Amino acid sequence: MMQIVQISRGKVRVPAKKEGAPETVIFNTSKHLARMGHEVVILDRKYSRDDLSIDCVEDVKIARLDALQVRFGKAPWFIRFVLAELNIALFALKVSRYLRRNRQNIDIIHLHLTLIGLILVILNKRLRSKMFYTCHLSHWALATNELSTLERITLLLDSYLMRRVKRVIALNDLAKESFNYRGKVKAENIVVVHNGVDTDFFNPDIEIEGTVKRYRLEGKLTVLFVGRLAKIKGLEYLIKAADITVNEFRYRDTLFVLVGSPTFLAVDESITMEEMLSLTQRYQLEKNILFTGSLPSEEVRMLYAAADIFVLPSLGEGDPLVTLEAMASGKPVIATTVGGIPRQIRDGWNGFLIDPADERQLAEKIKYLIDNSDERERMGLNARRYAEEEFDWRKVAERLLRVYES
Image (cartoon, rainbow, N blue to C red; front, side, top):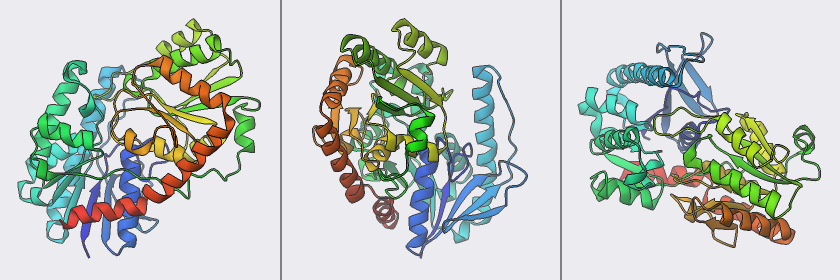
């Protein structure tokens, strides 16, 4: 039996009820590792006074650390960013204290965020041989000349961390190559473990009548996007593709539903709601694009089931969970050839692969699926089967365990 500690980002409660891809990975792998007989503890912070110091959710022990958290409300973007990073650093210091106090009883320390990892490898040199780091940053896949100064600094710090832990876990093969030749990480210290999906929670056979009424989807062909609202997600090209679909191809009953909230992460170039609404108005798409904001996971899974097509026009990705969730929900997926997406999508079998930053190509694939309902059904069935066979979280946890044992 192994003693495994997974460290959250200290910014989204585990298990995540809204956005939080790393938190979803942490919780689901921990759950299945615990069911295999290993002792797993997730370190998270207390988000309210009512939080228990030790929590237990679905066989997973969660230790909630009492770390100071500075509130920043609606402060300007830069202030919010600085205070958010300060909060993460304060949480990391609490984590460091926990690890030193319990180091004799820990076999594996699994990191998921650059800043926390940096603080821990600096303060705990003796524990580096127990540290594994999963990099969730999608920017490693972008060309150097596409990165801002802040993004380059982030990747520089990320590579520093990677070179000081026992193993680096990449979410796809392209990321592994980038860690090696751009981050100068030894190839033998990098392994690929793809993400997974809960195929019981996300499935096509759930009640959606209330969702259809709530979002007025009756009589609409619904195209769904789920993700943070950032330029790297290709939202500009999605809105332009909606313009082609509605105004040029004349599919007036198509509704594009965009689920997610704007981001102010250091590694993201943000796109504001004002910018997106301006594009929507420019193309006269007010009746064809719906921005829902951030939604609880229960609501998102019903939208997956109610939608007809899922799209992810990202410019860069790691191994996106949303495409897997759409597949598990029995939907054909149109996504770009970036990151781990080509392993998830078999072009023409369970969806379509398109080039990034190409709204015309995206619109044409949407048109094809609108025109061919039998193809939508065929690809959706294939997507569901592929999710069950290849991407179930239990199988991902088994692969992760082999990495620990190596």
